[in-house]
Amino acid sequence: QVQLVESGGGSVQAGGSLRLSCVVSRYGASTYSMSWFRRAPGTLREGVAAIYATDSSKHYADSVKDRFTISQDNAKNTLYLQMNSLKPEDAAMYYCAAGQPQWADRVLFPLNYNYWGQGTQVTVSS
View 1 (cartoon, rainbow, N blue to C red):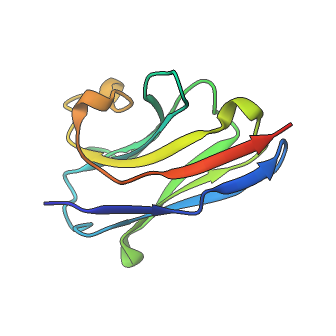
View 2 (tube, rainbow, N blue to C red):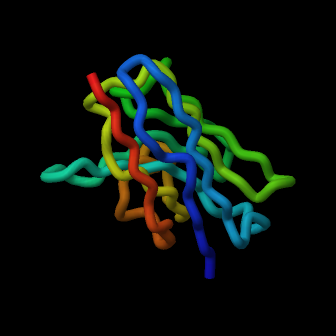
């Protein structure tokens, strides 16, 4: 069983930054890929960024490339998402997830993830 607890959400103005954190209860499970997803009202859950366990490669949605950075600190059992140059369209509930996608090009698909956090809300005002 893997438990995930997110934090760091909040309200910012467009152009601002936030850093989300996700504490993982079983971070020693190195076979798990770790990802951030988001869901805005009326939309489907969207993969934002991921670290693929097999080769530690990082993957991003086109909408956040060059603005968001995913990272992990194994000593702290924590996954991070640094979000810069935030836009109103980035506003959503953000979720941390752990799973075992078979291929790197599937790391941003939510069906590949078994474990989810409760989410942290990000609001961006224009």
